[in-house]
Image (spheres, rainbow over the protein chains, first blue to last red):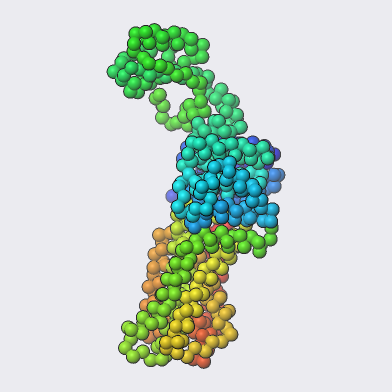
Length: 310
Length: 243
């Protein structure tokens, strides 16, 4: 076991209020696993991550990295666990090559391996910016540089806080590939994000954090089945003026512009497609898409205070 | 990994990340220090040699005060605001190593200004420098006190407040502190205040080592600086390690 978090709570007490940022959280991460931490802004994700790195001490509970208490050895914890922060790392006058190699030397000392750095740069296709000063780099390249600074040394655990923000779609793809490769060498990854769609594809297991509590934890398919197994049917209509009567088995219908969508039981899919063809013959609709419940649907259903109208 | 190599890499990272700023700042410091020595003589018609000696021995102290208690807090404020400080806290090194590396950088960039202003003063006015061996430890003691106090209040206070404090420090140090002129000219209540504040002790210790034949510093001055230095760094380390 790489990481074990047992009954961790963190309470912030100020003069005005008492805030429970983390409420009795427990989870563990195996070697080579990607663990997603999902949650709204202010759900307590960053507070939890800071405690794993030993930057904050839990109010109660304990955290063990490789079987050793983080609370007792915070400096050691930071040497086996690297973090890419959510905010951009201001590189100033450092070029990506300088920043990453200095970080590599700080983490590995004499064992720093320049070949690993070249491989990271190559895999992320960063060649053209390697010798550009940090302050002249675009947001995406800065973000990738910060990722390389985190991944430059072989660590047991790396924490990535929104690593794909600002990164273009092609390099996002490369980035996920690199993260997967890291796990093959035994590195475990905590992915902190509110980009649920991306997380669903990338993670092995995930936990949804809401108001300091885990409301769901497991593999993506476990979590999806915990809510419902409805299918979403979305129709593009000829134009927004068209009025369409939905079939009686449609659940939670939503009409927005020229799009109409509703959920349905999987057993009703065939009927719905037949129904759609009738509508098409009468010239009211153009096409449809059919998709299973996503983690995003589950996430919204579990975390939203208000009724979501789709 | 040992502390020394940690220090080396943290120093490199911090120094090269801000190298453009440091060069610019060292140049500005040279201008300011020469400005203090030469510029203030314009404000006083026929300055006596002792007035010039006050200015010439006060300039290095002011450079150290500006660096430690004005520029440094501004830098800390920026790195607090843009999240860099939080990132630094996640590095796999002891906080004291980071503080030591940063301190070394700040000390380093004051050296050109202090050297140049002293040389300029010597060649233009020949105010009668008489350097004692204490100049090196005195320089370090004053620099560490100034930087330590700067660290202390800029980590302790929110950025806006520490910016305000640094504005008061620069104005107070230039106009209301016995750094460029003798203590006796100040009203009594300010004299009493300066017994506790580190500014006067800094200037006394600097003067005593730059012109040992004219000036001397008391043991009280040294003790004052050591206490402020410990308070400053202690506060900074306390905040850095706070969880």
